[in-house]
Image (cartoon, rainbow, N blue to C red; front, top):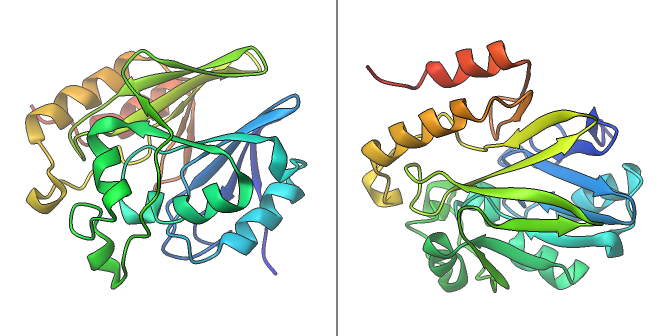
Length: 225
């Protein structure tokens, strides 16, 4: 059995993604404040047992997980949402513009068909908007709307160990008409992400970037003009 978690700060770990859960999973992150925790994204749902093992290996009892915070509706990020909600009893939260496609199990907009699979419909308990705050043990996770890759793409920003940690899963795109992508919105969102001056960026497919210069350089790769 391979690694179960990659520590980012003492309160934040990567517990899912290639090498940790299923090869098709985008990165799954765990935020743990005292006796409460949240997951950032759910992967495609093909390795939920392994994911739950990784949660416990990171020192979190599954019952402590209050929220599954989804960045968007795409299968590699949200496909495991329904089973996680059933098994952990946590609240699923995402932007309303993407919630419709997750709740209906839309295989096209979610890109599940690209993986040769269906999307298990998942109830969305909380519809988030730009500027909302999700609270764990009195500490806030800021919600940031970054449309473009999908209409309801979200990033989450939190402070840990005095550093600004940004979860912005698909900074790199891609953009596709079937995903309802919008290039103008995407470019504006990239500039918005860069302006946040995060100290750590947790991306969905390109790993974890540490340091503002490295984060800015990564985002700049995708900014046009």
